[in-house]
Length: 106
Image (cartoon, rainbow, N blue to C red; front, top):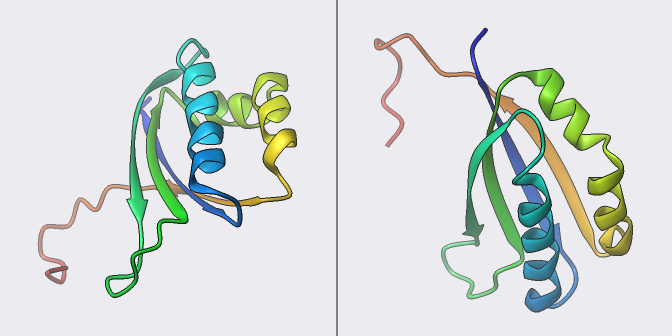
Protein backbone atom coordinates (compact mmCIF):
# COMPACT_ATOMS: atom_id res chain seq x y z
CA UNK A 1 0.00 0.00 0.00
CA UNK A 2 1.20 3.54 -0.76
CA UNK A 3 1.80 6.15 1.89
CA UNK A 4 -0.64 9.04 1.99
CA UNK A 5 -0.17 12.76 2.52
CA UNK A 6 -2.54 14.99 4.46
CA UNK A 7 -2.83 18.73 3.93
CA UNK A 8 -3.83 20.46 7.16
CA UNK A 9 -4.83 24.11 7.18
CA UNK A 10 -4.97 25.64 10.64
CA UNK A 11 -6.19 29.23 11.11
CA UNK A 12 -6.03 31.08 14.42
CA UNK A 13 -7.82 33.96 16.08
CA UNK A 14 -5.30 34.06 18.93
CA UNK A 15 -1.75 35.27 19.38
CA UNK A 16 0.92 33.82 17.12
CA UNK A 17 2.70 32.54 20.26
CA UNK A 18 -0.34 30.51 21.33
CA UNK A 19 -0.78 29.29 17.77
CA UNK A 20 2.84 28.19 17.56
CA UNK A 21 2.50 26.46 20.95
CA UNK A 22 -0.49 24.51 19.64
CA UNK A 23 1.27 23.33 16.50
CA UNK A 24 4.47 22.56 18.40
CA UNK A 25 2.57 20.45 20.94
CA UNK A 26 0.90 18.52 18.13
CA UNK A 27 4.24 18.00 16.38
CA UNK A 28 5.97 16.79 19.54
CA UNK A 29 3.16 14.36 20.29
CA UNK A 30 2.78 12.92 16.78
CA UNK A 31 6.48 12.02 16.52
CA UNK A 32 5.98 8.64 18.19
CA UNK A 33 2.49 7.94 16.89
CA UNK A 34 2.18 4.66 14.92
CA UNK A 35 2.07 5.22 11.17
CA UNK A 36 3.43 8.78 11.22
CA UNK A 37 6.33 9.26 8.79
CA UNK A 38 7.04 13.00 8.81
CA UNK A 39 5.76 16.49 8.08
CA UNK A 40 6.61 20.02 7.01
CA UNK A 41 4.79 23.19 8.07
CA UNK A 42 4.57 26.61 6.46
CA UNK A 43 3.15 29.96 7.49
CA UNK A 44 0.59 31.06 4.91
CA UNK A 45 -0.41 34.70 4.44
CA UNK A 46 -1.86 36.96 1.79
CA UNK A 47 0.87 38.51 -0.35
CA UNK A 48 -0.04 42.08 0.57
CA UNK A 49 -0.63 41.64 4.32
CA UNK A 50 1.97 41.05 7.01
CA UNK A 51 -0.18 38.87 9.28
CA UNK A 52 0.59 35.26 9.98
CA UNK A 53 -2.52 33.49 11.18
CA UNK A 54 -2.55 30.35 9.03
CA UNK A 55 -0.26 27.35 9.09
CA UNK A 56 -0.25 24.75 6.33
CA UNK A 57 1.16 21.34 7.24
CA UNK A 58 1.75 18.47 4.87
CA UNK A 59 2.18 15.22 6.76
CA UNK A 60 2.96 11.75 5.47
CA UNK A 61 1.37 8.62 6.89
CA UNK A 62 1.65 4.90 6.26
CA UNK A 63 -2.10 4.71 5.56
CA UNK A 64 -5.37 6.58 5.88
CA UNK A 65 -6.09 4.33 8.87
CA UNK A 66 -2.95 5.62 10.60
CA UNK A 67 -4.05 9.21 9.98
CA UNK A 68 -7.60 8.54 11.22
CA UNK A 69 -6.22 6.89 14.36
CA UNK A 70 -4.12 10.00 15.04
CA UNK A 71 -6.98 12.38 14.30
CA UNK A 72 -9.30 10.55 16.72
CA UNK A 73 -6.62 9.84 19.35
CA UNK A 74 -6.88 10.88 22.97
CA UNK A 75 -3.44 12.51 22.73
CA UNK A 76 -4.43 14.76 19.84
CA UNK A 77 -7.86 15.58 21.24
CA UNK A 78 -6.43 16.60 24.63
CA UNK A 79 -4.21 19.17 22.88
CA UNK A 80 -6.98 20.28 20.53
CA UNK A 81 -9.45 20.79 23.39
CA UNK A 82 -7.20 23.49 24.88
CA UNK A 83 -7.19 25.58 21.68
CA UNK A 84 -10.36 24.61 19.78
CA UNK A 85 -12.14 27.90 20.52
CA UNK A 86 -9.34 29.87 18.84
CA UNK A 87 -8.23 27.62 15.99
CA UNK A 88 -10.08 26.17 13.01
CA UNK A 89 -8.76 23.20 11.06
CA UNK A 90 -9.41 21.74 7.62
CA UNK A 91 -7.91 18.52 6.27
CA UNK A 92 -7.54 17.06 2.80
CA UNK A 93 -5.88 13.94 1.43
CA UNK A 94 -3.34 14.82 -1.27
CA UNK A 95 -3.27 12.61 -4.34
CA UNK A 96 -0.24 12.88 -6.60
CA UNK A 97 -1.04 13.86 -10.17
CA UNK A 98 0.53 11.18 -12.35
CA UNK A 99 -0.55 12.80 -15.63
CA UNK A 100 2.42 14.75 -16.97
CA UNK A 101 0.32 16.32 -19.75
CA UNK A 102 -1.65 18.47 -17.34
CA UNK A 103 -1.93 22.24 -17.15
CA UNK A 104 1.19 24.06 -16.01
CA UNK A 105 0.50 25.37 -12.50
CA UNK A 106 2.91 28.29 -12.20
